[in-house]
Length: 142
Image (cartoon, rainbow, N blue to C red; front, side, top):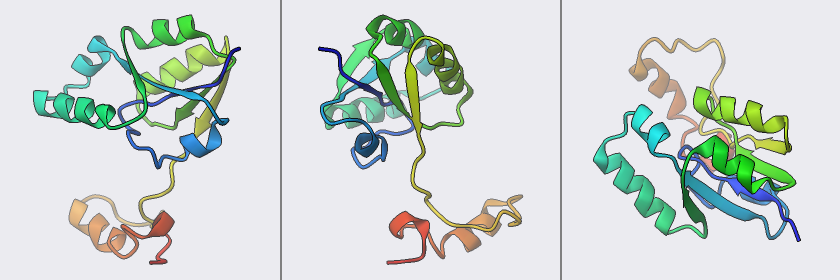
């Protein structure tokens, strides 16, 4: 019996990500430890240890290999992926969309900020963001 698959990447390492609610019950979650991707991301040893330790706390299978090749070989009928702006992840999604059903799941917003906010300096951003940060769905509701 084939099942749906969740590809959890390094930008969505938590059980509360909406991808788990969107995927069908029993979907298998995997993380692909891609040496080339991680090296090109410029992660420090501390960051890599953090990622690995986080993965060890999740009910997820860690697979070592090339991301695109591994996902192609698994070839589940449908793949659920947390959305990311990262170009590598976007390219993998584009490649996989040709051979399987891919569902991109958006994350819940961290903050709610007007699009016309000046983002040239972090302090200006944070003065606006802290009003809704750490609240349920960034909505301002406690």
